[in-house]
Amino acid sequence: MKDSLFYFCPGLKKHPHTLLLSSAYLPPVEYFAYLQKYPQALIEQHETYPKQTYRNRCHIYTEKGKTTLSVPVSKVNGNRTKTNEVELFNEERWQMNHWRAIESAYIASPYFLFYKDELAACYSTRFHKLLEFNTRLTKQLCTLIGIDTEIGFTDEFHRKHEDVIDLRSAINPKKPSTIGHFPEYIQVFGDRHGFIPNLSIIDLLFNLGPGTKNYLAGIVDQD
Image 1 (cartoon, one colour):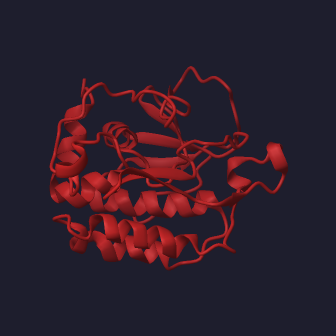
Image 2: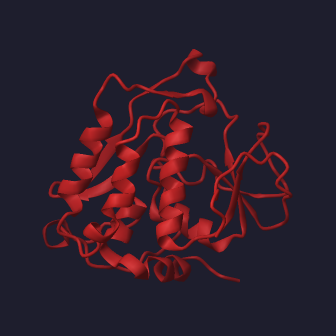
């Protein structure tokens, strides 16, 4: 695996199996299922930043059931702000609050103690831009899972692409999952609320550990 799994690469040569994704905060399971399937992926950075998407929010499993964590952001150019311009609103202690919520939710999971230090480091580092923070987390998660997909960033915005697999808008918390079935696995609060599929990848990682990659491979057609 490359040391710099994520890098600005406007010259990344695309081929028929290049994936196009939005930036996402602790993305859902389906996001990583596609990442591990395709050899190359581009993250869209030049779109006009949309609201209420996975770009700044994720879903975890707490004692209350499905719970949303939202990263506070500032759109420096108003409604014309591009994703790579969105700043983190660091006046709020959101990093500490998010990590505390994650720790409380998953400290009883089988693999939390095994992976927590690598992820906690991301929450103890101050970031200025949302894209930078999301990238750092996703890079770390790819390393922990064992995903070695080559990932770059778009160098300009195109509404439609004919030469990539475009999932920028398809993976969205307001839309049904692009994957029809998620096999059940044991979740910390499953005895209270039942199985909740397609949560943030950390739910799968903390509960399945080294089995995460095989789970991801099993839910996306490998043909």
